[in-house]
Image 1 (cartoon, rainbow, N blue to C red):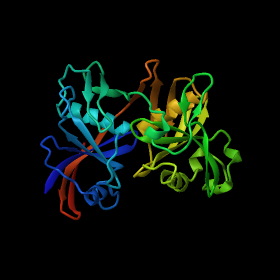
Image 2: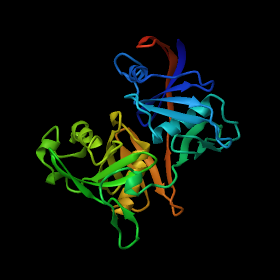
Image 3: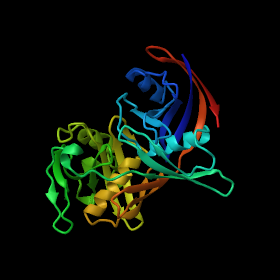
Image 4: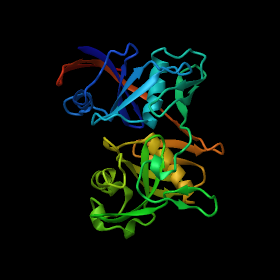
Length: 318
């Protein structure tokens, strides 16, 4: 079967976008893995099927699948690419600036910003309220009560690893996140780094992140963020559940800002610096988290899918 696809990315977090408004596709996990394979397939961190929503208030439904073939509740960079796809493919009226999109987590409100010529600039996503209850994240780590705010959340709970102990603050943005603040990189074992200099850029995220992603403390597995707070914002690297390290993670940026605010490391608005670029994150007084960032179409093409593999792809550069 030949299908058309579009390759989009948000700060390098990239996706194979497929128009499935007729709901004819039922991709297997192996097919998704082949599509996302960077050597034998198209190459991506995940696949997004654009489908009709069963909710009358929603323009469309974002069906997001990780590169390992597992279904995910939500993807922050993916939802911005989803919005850009709807804009580019004519599913949004030209004069529409705000709309509701459907996700596995539930409906989300998005705002598309245009320039004076009407061209796409960026997307602001209302990511809804952060979830702090341990059982809903989910995690077996214990909550503590903040005496100042009265909020109960999983705050800097220690987990042992082959590289030493790491402290995690846990937040769900519809998908689980465990945020580790590296306040003193020099205190970490040299085994945590790929080279002599102890910097966030040389942290062994692929190894350490994979260990914690599948730790028993996270029964549904978990996205793992490592954060260094600096004067210009939060600097982040992320190991995404079902994918590995990526250049950016929108829900991870949101969870990290919430965790930083909860632990008094940041105010409720800050920039999050990822390997692929910068996201602007606000945890508003209405308890909703807002994410602003770009979404870009790289190229389009067709791919022939067979039951077991991908046999041929044709790419058209955009």
